[in-house]
Each structure stands twice: as C-alpha cells, then as structure tokens.
Image (cartoon, rainbow, N blue to C red; front, side):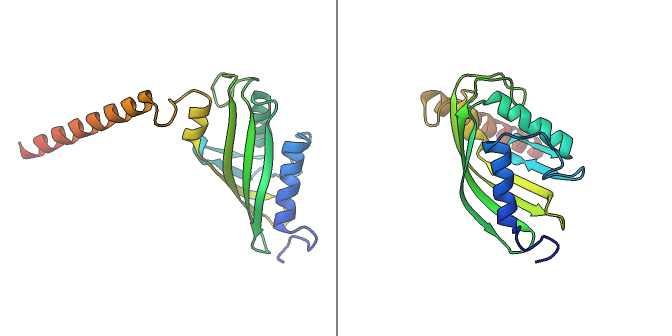
Length: 176
C-alpha cells in the first residue's frame, strides 16, 4: 500500500466514513475524514462541495432534511491502494428542513447509488464522486410526475413536440 497504513484499507476507511456519518450521525469533527481541499461531486444534484467545513454543512442539511435517513452498504471494492467504490442503498422520509433548496414534502425516498472515493496518503478523502438517479429522487418527492403516468407521458410528448419544432425552425433558417 502507498501511504495508507496496512490496517486501514480504502474499504475500511469508506466503511468507517459511512458508519460515522450515517449510523452515528457524528459530524463533530469535520477533519476526521476530510481536508480543506477535499471535493465531493454530487452529480445528480449538480454540485461539487469543497472543504471539510462545507461538506459538514452539506451532510448536516441532508440529515436535517431526512431525519430518519439510513444508508446501507451493499458492496465495496477497492484497488488495495487509495481508491474504493461503495454501492449503497439509502432510505428515509423528507420531513425535516429544506434540502438543496427544496422544501420537505413528507415523502419517503429509497435510492441506490455509488460513491467513488480517492483517498490521500493520510487516508482522508481527496475526492469522492457520488452517483445516484436524481430524476428518481425528484419523482419520489413529488417534484416530477411518476414514471409512465399520464402526466409523465404528456410532459415527454410536449418536450418532443417542442424539440421537433425547434429542429424545423433551425432547418428552415439554414435554407433561407
């Protein structure tokens, strides 16, 4: 291993991070897992959050918004050096405060996702890229219509109609 001590594999560090953040909900020491240069990329939310203090605030907002939030690790693999990939399942009810500017809806959510961690030589998170289906989250909280519902089909039809109209307009402008 390079830098990270033998007893703390990337998988072990990732497990500990999930346990402390989501089981114990202990955000008392922002520098336990993060540094001021750590970056988490929350792709579905369209946000990158940099630094231990900002990450602590982001996770506080999440846990405040979904007070019964639970994260279960389904699988972890690592490269034996500095990277770990964690497949997870999360659930909870959006009954607390706002999250990402969205007021609580009282809806229960269940998501599957993946975190791709890269740790520094000291075993702290250098970068983490978080993948989950943001549209599924939006559907579950009622921000988007249920998949395959009449409203969903109507939105898709309207979108496709507008797309074809824009394409016809662009084509007619390029001919003239």
